[in-house]
Each structure stands twice: as structure tokens, then as C-alpha cells.
Image (cartoon, rainbow, N blue to C red; front, side):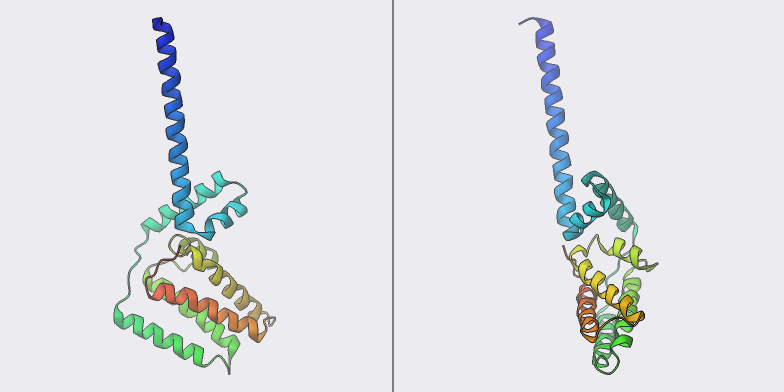
Amino acid sequence: MSTNSLIAVIVVAAVVVLALTALLWTLARRRHLRERFGPEYERTVEEEGDKRSAERELRAREERHDQLDIKELSPERRHEYADEWSGVQQQFVDQPERCVAEADELVTRLMGERGYPTDGYQGQVRDLSVEHGSTLEHYRAAHAAKVRSGAGEATTEELRGAMVHYRTLFEALLSDQRSR
């Protein structure tokens, strides 16, 4: 085999190795994002229109989240929040619309105390998605019912469902449980 042929084989082999390495790296990053974001991964792909854009968005969320100072609550604060949640739930039968609004406020306050920015619903969803991807559907459903309630369009059953959905996120945030 001539020197030129040997060089050509080595170059082709190097290109193949680099291509395989890049492919494996891409697949590993994709698997990481799927595992970290859970159902939020597919939702973001659908919203963005393609996997590349979605993955860029999800990586940006990770980077933003890494800059946050997320804190655990003391046992005393957890107990206080749990008591406050119980009080909101107890009033539901008499004032369902008010209780859903209070549940939303309580979740937002809890997020803020934990260190999540609370600058609007879309921002909250974005920031929660990194560690609480599987509870976001609950949060979205609860928020939608709250919005409908504010317009006088939610049924009592929708409001009851909203409380259940808010409770799912509330418990995850309160216990420092990360969901995937």
C-alpha cells in the first residue's frame, strides 16, 4: 500500500471516528434532556417545531436554572406552609373560586421562598420545568382552571380538579422532591 493510500485510509478512519463521536455525544445529550425534563421534552419539541430548537431551549433553561439559588425549607417553614394549605382546602366547599386563587398564590409564594423567580406564569413554568417537568401538566391544568374561574367560566368540578393539581406541585415543592 502506498503512502498516499495509507494517508487516505487514516483520514477516512479519523473522519468516521469523529462523526461517530459527535453522534454518540448528541444522543447522550438528547437522552439527558429527555430524562431531566420528562414529558416537557416532547412538549417543547412540539412547541418549537424541531428537536434541535427544542434542545437549545431546554439547555438554556438548564443554564438559567443553574444560576438560581434554590433552597430547601426548614422543617418549621414546611409545617407552616402545610398548615396554610390545609386551611385553604378546608374552605373549598364554601368558597371554591377564592380557594383556587389562594392555592395559586400559596404555590407562588412557596416558589419564591424556595428561590424560584415568580415573574409571571410563563417564567414560572420555564423555571420549574428543569426539576419538576412531570408536575408541569398539573400546574398548567390548575392555572387554566384559575383563569377560567376569573372569567366566571369554571365549574365547581374544574375548580376541585385545580385544587388537586395545585396540591401535586405544592407537595413536590414543599418536600424538595424533584420530579422527572
